[in-house]
Length: 60
Image 1 (cartoon, rainbow, N blue to C red):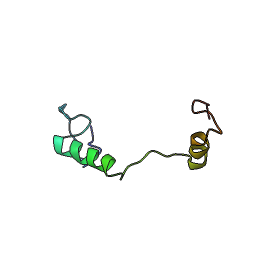
Image 2: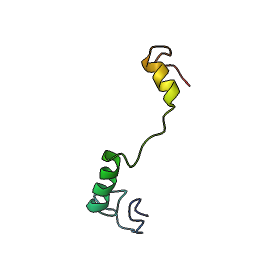
Image 3: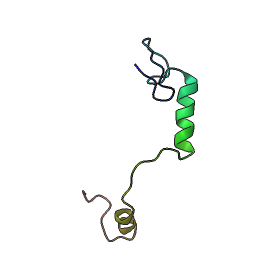
Image 4: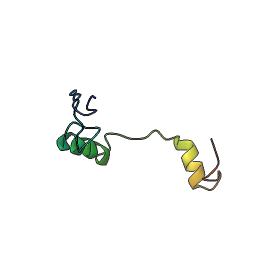
């Protein structure tokens, strides 16, 4: 398996799976909390939903 943070290859299961260590898990969490990572969003569609023009549960 390859750690998504440091890219170290490891075989033994760890308590921090899928990371090789607790340190790499914390680095990844910090990246999410610091907004280095994000999920793509269609801004125009989301603003229309918030304005009530499109129902929240409407499929894309």
